[in-house]
Length: 186
Image 1 (spheres, rainbow, N blue to C red):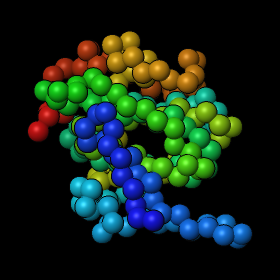
Image 2: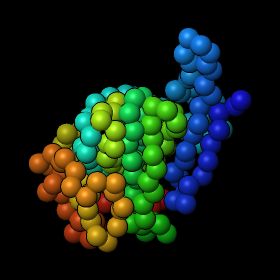
Image 3: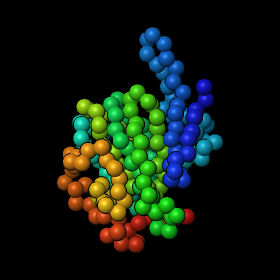
Image 4: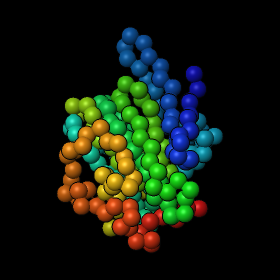
């Protein structure tokens, strides 16, 4: 079976289902192969991989970088999360629209999030191991975000009282962001 790719209702966000080969011993899968992803438009260079381990109810996000935008290919290695991407590109026909899906160690799906989107996830299993493949380096001085519970965006998170970092609990709503504080649609 070949790598499968699905479009989402928000153009640019793609769902991948990598090949998985298993037997009684377990399984093997390629989590990324440049030449297999390239036909779907993923011809970017990835420069940093990030790994996070989180407990049930943890919500990380909604994060983005402005001057050093990162496209991300994300997946869960163990556990389950509700993963969300929000189009925050000024002038985009889908500005403020979000897409969410379950990523898990069982379904082995991946979500590709292009530059210009805010990203976050909420852990719904006891624990989750999350892997991010990024096209630019993390820059603490360029770290930005949108409030996870912004009512104008209206994300239907699985947990209404998540565990948040102090930083994430104080992020602004999308409508409070200055125009030059958001990426432009190209």
